[in-house]
Length: 169
Image 1: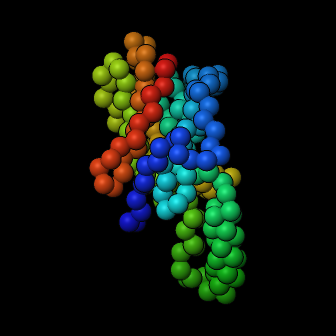
Image 2: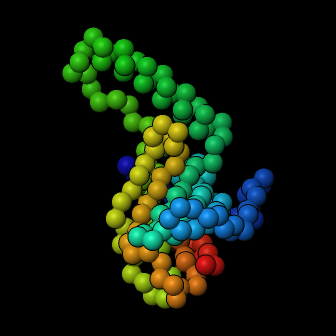
Protein backbone atom coordinates (compact mmCIF):
# COMPACT_ATOMS: atom_id res chain seq x y z
CA UNK A 1 0.00 0.00 0.00
CA UNK A 2 3.02 2.29 0.04
CA UNK A 3 2.83 3.10 3.75
CA UNK A 4 6.04 3.49 5.69
CA UNK A 5 6.91 3.04 9.33
CA UNK A 6 8.90 5.86 10.90
CA UNK A 7 10.65 5.07 14.16
CA UNK A 8 10.75 7.63 16.95
CA UNK A 9 12.76 7.88 20.11
CA UNK A 10 10.39 7.28 23.01
CA UNK A 11 11.90 10.05 25.12
CA UNK A 12 11.20 12.56 22.33
CA UNK A 13 7.47 11.90 22.35
CA UNK A 14 5.70 14.31 24.66
CA UNK A 15 2.80 12.99 26.66
CA UNK A 16 3.56 9.30 26.05
CA UNK A 17 3.55 6.98 29.03
CA UNK A 18 5.45 3.73 28.86
CA UNK A 19 4.47 0.90 31.18
CA UNK A 20 6.81 -1.91 32.01
CA UNK A 21 5.50 -5.31 30.96
CA UNK A 22 2.78 -6.60 33.16
CA UNK A 23 1.74 -10.25 33.35
CA UNK A 24 -1.90 -11.20 32.96
CA UNK A 25 -3.18 -14.79 33.09
CA UNK A 26 -5.28 -15.99 30.15
CA UNK A 27 -7.02 -19.25 29.28
CA UNK A 28 -4.24 -20.44 26.97
CA UNK A 29 -1.20 -19.17 28.81
CA UNK A 30 0.06 -15.75 29.72
CA UNK A 31 -0.39 -12.30 28.21
CA UNK A 32 2.22 -9.59 28.53
CA UNK A 33 0.98 -6.00 28.18
CA UNK A 34 3.94 -3.81 27.21
CA UNK A 35 2.05 -0.74 25.82
CA UNK A 36 5.22 0.41 24.07
CA UNK A 37 5.16 2.94 21.23
CA UNK A 38 7.07 1.37 18.30
CA UNK A 39 6.86 4.18 15.76
CA UNK A 40 4.53 5.93 13.38
CA UNK A 41 2.70 4.99 10.20
CA UNK A 42 1.42 8.04 8.31
CA UNK A 43 1.45 10.05 11.51
CA UNK A 44 -0.36 7.41 13.61
CA UNK A 45 1.45 5.98 16.64
CA UNK A 46 1.83 2.19 16.45
CA UNK A 47 1.85 0.52 19.87
CA UNK A 48 2.89 -2.99 20.89
CA UNK A 49 -0.31 -3.81 22.75
CA UNK A 50 -0.13 -7.44 23.91
CA UNK A 51 1.97 -10.55 23.53
CA UNK A 52 0.10 -13.75 24.38
CA UNK A 53 2.09 -16.93 25.07
CA UNK A 54 -0.24 -19.77 24.20
CA UNK A 55 0.14 -23.53 24.31
CA UNK A 56 0.16 -23.73 20.49
CA UNK A 57 1.53 -20.38 19.35
CA UNK A 58 2.40 -16.77 20.19
CA UNK A 59 -0.02 -13.91 19.39
CA UNK A 60 1.32 -10.37 19.02
CA UNK A 61 -1.22 -7.54 18.90
CA UNK A 62 -0.36 -4.04 17.73
CA UNK A 63 -2.70 -1.04 17.73
CA UNK A 64 -2.81 2.59 16.76
CA UNK A 65 -3.13 5.24 19.43
CA UNK A 66 -6.68 6.66 19.29
CA UNK A 67 -6.63 10.40 18.70
CA UNK A 68 -8.33 13.14 16.66
CA UNK A 69 -6.88 11.74 13.44
CA UNK A 70 -8.22 8.22 13.99
CA UNK A 71 -11.60 9.69 15.01
CA UNK A 72 -11.68 11.68 11.77
CA UNK A 73 -10.76 8.60 9.72
CA UNK A 74 -13.44 6.57 11.54
CA UNK A 75 -16.04 9.24 10.80
CA UNK A 76 -15.08 9.34 7.10
CA UNK A 77 -15.33 5.54 6.98
CA UNK A 78 -18.79 5.57 8.60
CA UNK A 79 -19.98 8.08 5.99
CA UNK A 80 -18.52 6.01 3.12
CA UNK A 81 -20.04 2.84 4.60
CA UNK A 82 -23.53 4.40 4.83
CA UNK A 83 -23.26 5.57 1.20
CA UNK A 84 -22.13 2.10 0.11
CA UNK A 85 -25.03 0.45 1.97
CA UNK A 86 -27.54 2.79 0.31
CA UNK A 87 -26.05 2.00 -3.13
CA UNK A 88 -26.00 -1.74 -2.42
CA UNK A 89 -29.77 -1.75 -1.68
CA UNK A 90 -30.59 -0.39 -5.13
CA UNK A 91 -27.64 -1.98 -6.97
CA UNK A 92 -26.92 -5.46 -5.55
CA UNK A 93 -23.80 -5.69 -7.72
CA UNK A 94 -22.41 -2.48 -6.21
CA UNK A 95 -18.67 -2.30 -5.65
CA UNK A 96 -16.90 -3.73 -2.61
CA UNK A 97 -17.54 -1.99 0.72
CA UNK A 98 -15.06 0.70 1.71
CA UNK A 99 -11.89 -0.55 3.40
CA UNK A 100 -11.58 0.16 7.10
CA UNK A 101 -9.04 2.93 7.76
CA UNK A 102 -6.88 0.68 9.95
CA UNK A 103 -6.67 -2.12 7.37
CA UNK A 104 -2.98 -1.33 6.77
CA UNK A 105 -2.21 -2.64 10.29
CA UNK A 106 -1.98 -6.25 9.00
CA UNK A 107 0.74 -5.18 6.54
CA UNK A 108 3.13 -3.92 9.22
CA UNK A 109 6.07 -6.37 9.22
CA UNK A 110 6.20 -7.88 12.72
CA UNK A 111 8.74 -10.56 13.69
CA UNK A 112 9.58 -12.32 16.95
CA UNK A 113 12.69 -14.05 18.26
CA UNK A 114 13.90 -15.39 21.59
CA UNK A 115 17.15 -16.02 23.41
CA UNK A 116 16.78 -19.81 22.90
CA UNK A 117 17.20 -19.41 19.13
CA UNK A 118 13.68 -20.57 18.20
CA UNK A 119 12.72 -20.06 14.54
CA UNK A 120 9.23 -18.53 14.55
CA UNK A 121 6.99 -18.60 11.49
CA UNK A 122 4.08 -16.23 10.92
CA UNK A 123 0.98 -18.37 10.39
CA UNK A 124 -1.87 -15.89 10.51
CA UNK A 125 -2.96 -12.28 10.71
CA UNK A 126 -6.21 -10.81 11.96
CA UNK A 127 -6.97 -7.26 10.94
CA UNK A 128 -9.39 -4.58 11.93
CA UNK A 129 -13.08 -5.28 12.34
CA UNK A 130 -15.98 -4.07 14.43
CA UNK A 131 -14.62 -3.29 17.87
CA UNK A 132 -11.04 -3.78 16.61
CA UNK A 133 -10.88 -0.92 14.10
CA UNK A 134 -7.29 -0.03 14.98
CA UNK A 135 -5.80 -3.40 15.99
CA UNK A 136 -4.04 -6.24 14.21
CA UNK A 137 -2.89 -9.58 15.61
CA UNK A 138 -0.11 -11.71 14.16
CA UNK A 139 0.19 -15.37 15.21
CA UNK A 140 3.50 -17.26 15.18
CA UNK A 141 4.44 -20.95 15.47
CA UNK A 142 5.80 -22.61 17.56
CA UNK A 143 4.93 -21.61 21.14
CA UNK A 144 7.72 -20.10 23.23
CA UNK A 145 9.88 -22.91 24.65
CA UNK A 146 10.30 -23.26 28.41
CA UNK A 147 14.05 -22.48 28.20
CA UNK A 148 13.46 -19.05 26.63
CA UNK A 149 13.90 -16.16 29.06
CA UNK A 150 13.51 -13.23 26.63
CA UNK A 151 11.13 -12.69 23.71
CA UNK A 152 11.90 -9.86 21.29
CA UNK A 153 9.20 -8.30 19.08
CA UNK A 154 10.49 -6.34 16.06
CA UNK A 155 8.96 -4.12 13.41
CA UNK A 156 10.93 -3.34 10.25
CA UNK A 157 10.64 0.00 8.47
CA UNK A 158 10.61 0.43 4.69
CA UNK A 159 14.14 1.90 4.83
CA UNK A 160 15.49 -1.24 6.54
CA UNK A 161 15.62 0.29 10.02
CA UNK A 162 14.22 -1.94 12.76
CA UNK A 163 12.64 -1.17 16.13
CA UNK A 164 12.63 -3.95 18.72
CA UNK A 165 11.33 -4.43 22.23
CA UNK A 166 12.49 -7.29 24.45
CA UNK A 167 10.20 -8.81 27.05
CA UNK A 168 11.44 -10.77 30.04
CA UNK A 169 9.54 -14.03 30.32
